[in-house]
Every structure is written in C-alpha cells, then in structure tokens.
Amino acid sequence: MVESSPLANAIQFFKNFGLFDVVLPFLLVFAIVFAILEKTRILGTEGKKEDQIPKKNLNSMVSFVIALFVVASNQIVNAITTALPNIVLLVIVAVSFLMLVGVFATTNEFSLKGEHENYYKIFIAIMFIGVILIFLGAIETSSGQSWLGYGYDYVLNYWGGSIVSSLILLAVIVGAIIYIVGGKGGNEDK
Image 1 (cartoon, rainbow, N blue to C red):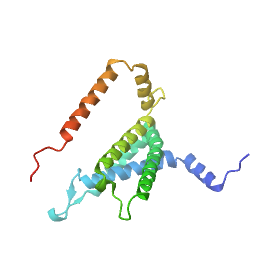
Image 2: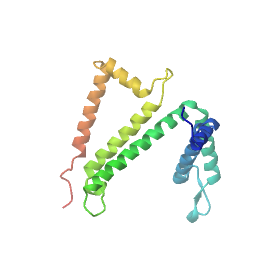
Image 3: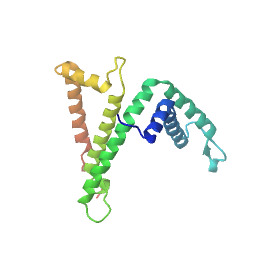
Image 4: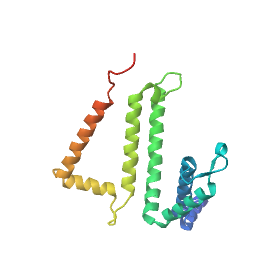
C-alpha cells in the first residue's frame, strides 16, 4: 500500500474543503469580471472630467454577484475546472513549440508575428480552435456526454445528412470569401 505524503494530504484536505470547487472558481470569475468592468468602465466613472476613475465599489459588487452565480451552478464550475487544466496544457505545448522554433532562429530576438505573419495567423487560429474544442469537451449535456462527443457522434451517424453537407458548403463559401477579400488589392498608394 502506498503511503501518502503530507503534501498530498494537504491537497486532499483543500479538495474536501471546497477550495477547487468553490473558492478558486469564485476568485477567478471575480477577478476577470472586475478587470473587464474596470477596463471598459461600463458602469460609469467618478471624479473630475480629467481625472475620471471607474466606480470600484459598483464594479466589485457586480463582480461579486456574478462570481456567486457562477459558483452556484455546478455545470459551469465543472466546465471551468475541466477546461482550465487542458488550456494550460495547450499553453505549455505552444511554449514548447516556440522554444523549438527558437532553437533554429538567429541570435536576434525571435518574433513569430513580425517575421512570419502568415504562420502567426495560422498558429493563433489553431490555438483558438483548440480552446473551443477544450470547452466543448468540458461542457456536458443532461445525459452526461460532452458537447464535443455529442457533435462527433452526430457527424459520424449523419455524415450524409443535409445539415452536415450544408455546414461543409457554408465553410467552403466563407473560406472562398475570406480568400478573395483577404488578398492584397491593386488600390495601394504608390
């Protein structure tokens, strides 16, 4: 029988206490919503016209209430606690990829966006799709199956159906429009 360490016991205590299911999701949602409200100043500002600052008390109260609503919903908390470790794994994969690319770069500072703009856009698109897939895999339906699993099963079962073929046609049309409109035109100033 494997004897557990004091650190493993402490983590288990925090898990039983609700740190990972209540406290950390609450703090995460509170901090993100508060930062968005402070940055956007949606709820107004106070002070003189030249020294306006966001209304911190109102922003904090709204952030507090939204964070409590999120913690009260088990489905949202489960999606957050399932998706965030996978997103961190995606970030680690991205940093590892950039380190490997950096090995072959010159001695100057490597800038994927500045030197290789097309690769940068592809990299961002892949990361965005990865995040979407992670969250679709974390959100569960009432039957317990993830949205990603449900969509995958639907595509496998109804591959020849009109919905799937319509989505493929729509993707091809949008791709063609982006390709045509995204090209550099001949109206550039000389």
